[in-house]
Image (cartoon, rainbow, N blue to C red; front, side):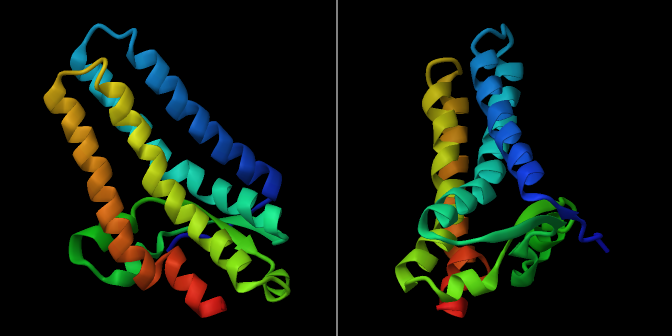
Length: 177
């Protein structure tokens, strides 16, 4: 079982920002790599970073803009495991994630739209930011590999649109509001 360690907000945000920075650095560095396979791996790692790291950071930024207070981050597991999809749920348990803990009382004082924006922002970021990778990759990779990254991004959107209303951020909008 994964220990639920508390991480101060500032440290959690720094980790999230560093993850996004690594993604950007990998995208920039990839153009200078001679091997197309290594460039593809750089882009693939960058893509994964852009799925995960902007997620909580976007919750934090949007939440603070609308008046949500946050307590801390924790190291936890993905709520994808709640779906009980055989392979997907098993893989999701292998990777610890940062989770942002909200001060529930601050949510109660907000409008439904402000709460919805806070919760939807993470899922939206996880769906949009990864598209940066195939857009850039089309200039530096064979077309087939760039299309593979585009297909991966589209698959991510489809999965998130399926998953999020059932067990993810979009399901939390209904549970709080």
